[in-house]
Every structure is written in C-alpha cells, then in structure tokens.
Length: 107
Length: 115
Image 1 (tube, one colour):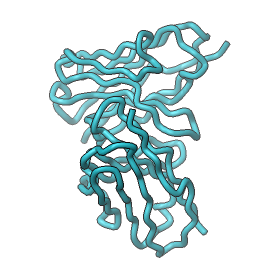
Image 2 (cartoon, chains in turn brown, green):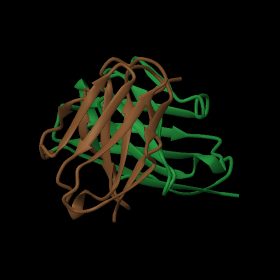
Image 3 (cartoon, each protein chain N blue to C red):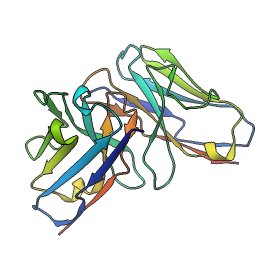
Image 4 (tube, rainbow over the protein chains, first blue to last red):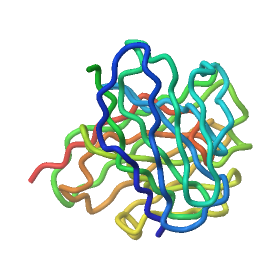
C-alpha cells in the first residue's frame, strides 16, 4: 500500500497569510494526487486533482504542485472560511489512500 | 447540478447487516467509476470500495473484503453497499463519491455499530 504522509498535522495562521501543506507518498504516484477541504460536520470538498489542476468553482487562491512523491498545497491570502482540515489522496493505485489531514486554525 | 444522496444508515448490532444506497443525479451515472469512502467522526478518511461503470470490476479495502459488497443499478442511477458481519470498527460516516479523484461527494450516512 502507498502511505501518504502530510505535514504539518496542524497549523496556526492569521487572516491574510499564505500557507503551504506538504504531502509525501511512500512511492512514486506520478501526478495522481488530489487535495480536499473539510469543515466540521460536512463532506470533504474537492480542491485540486492531478496534483495541480483546480477543480471547477474553486478559487485560484488554492494551488497545487508536485510530481512523483512530493506534493504541496498552497493557500494564499487566508480568509476566515479557509480555516478547515485539508487532506491529500493518492489515486495512482488501489488501495486508494489518504493523508492523515492538516488542521488549519486561526492564530 | 451533480447530486449524490445516501440513505440506509442507522444503528445495528455487532454482527448485523445494513445496506446503504446512493441515488445520483445531474450526470450520466453509467459512465463513471463510483466509490464508497468512510470516516470515523473527527478522524481521517478511508477508501472502502470501488466499482467500474458497468459493474464488471470491483475493488475493496482489506478491512472490508469478504464482508462488504459494492453494486450498482445504472437504470436507477443508484449505488449500493451491502455491509454484513458488521464490527465496532465499521462505525463511521459513509460517503458515496464519484470518480477516482473524488470530485463529488454525498452528504454522508452514519452507521453506528453497537454491541
């Protein structure tokens, strides 16, 4: 199984900040990497697929990069609605696996 | 508008069975791989099962293989998850999800397993 390791597990930031979350795969997954945002009590929401492609309707403040084993999600100009938990997911092979999540909190 | 609506969750005893359903609309269901993903409240996400558009191929997580069965009825735009021999560790919110990079999710259906 491909292990997905996200860092940090939690992050405190202020409104207006730019933050970066990292996801590392235990083996190469090409660009089969997606990012999700989840708010309490809600289903995850797709942000990024194919490592860097923005899902329709998602603001351009969200961006993804990487290939192979190392990936990043960057969120610029944080707004109150961006404080949530973020997950990465690899879909290169079964079993599909997720990172453990990064909780983004307001400082 | 793409919509996925799960139903069928609830309280079941250890060893019991439950069948989840997911009715979709707003897209051509028969063209897409579909998935079930679960999440213990407050915890991480776990892929459970996947099914090919025509239902001919199915994949399962090791944790549920042999106990859970994924199926679909393309004429009814519906996805199913038959869960047998339920265990305490199966207790979670179950999501119906479209496509391999999970572009659309249902609202989730809570399964509670009690001894």
